[in-house]
Length: 307
Image (cartoon, rainbow, N blue to C red; front, side, top):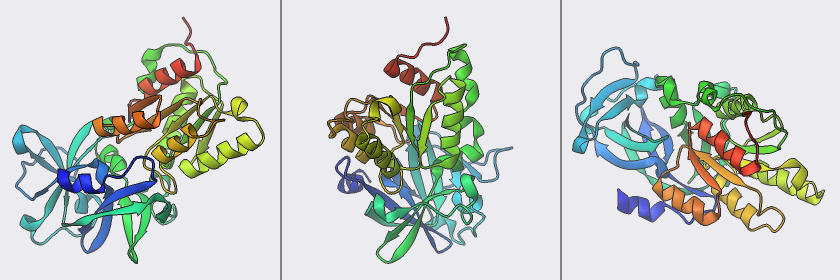
């Protein structure tokens, strides 16, 4: 698996993604290969009482206890008739490791983020839909699932919680302008609510790196960057333009390169930290550490909480 990942993990900032394709009931889905630690053939699991219906149980390969999520069951799709031939996709994100039970793994392909479209919210479940993108590749469509949402649905405590900000204490209101690039409508809403609770009220939201880049260029054309952006918060995985590509463009631009940029993503691991550092990220924070994000923004823009 490591050799496979090495062959597909691309140069940082090229606006491409490695997608691992897998199937459920004959339908093709995808997961960012950066989330995938390994794939394993199916093995029996131990059921857990009183757990979510999609939680198949737990197993302990190589002394690491992992939860197994039955993805067909979660998606309300037919389960395999021959589970002994199925596959576990072992994924790492949000500082956790989870096994996803699927039918088959097809392979890994490199796809430009420009070839990935945001799903129609009326078809894919509105702002809380579980498809983050639809990728067109080799004359077929691949549905990229929102694995963070799947895990949060099953275990709500693993997501962003406004209550985590309480320990920061009473805070002053701040007019420092913050720019957010986040494709998930649900997460964008939670980040906005969290920043407002922390006192930041001057916020511009964009749905992906391209929208953020277009916004910055518009400000630059009118010589208004300094008055409209004090800090940028960006996800990594986004259709049209990912966060690493956005970061590279900002750091290569003479009028934008000094703006503080915080990468706030479920993909933050040792490998991604190296990539983000190479591109010039001021900080890299793993979702859902929202209180840490606020503290970092405070430091970068000079905002203080009430003493």
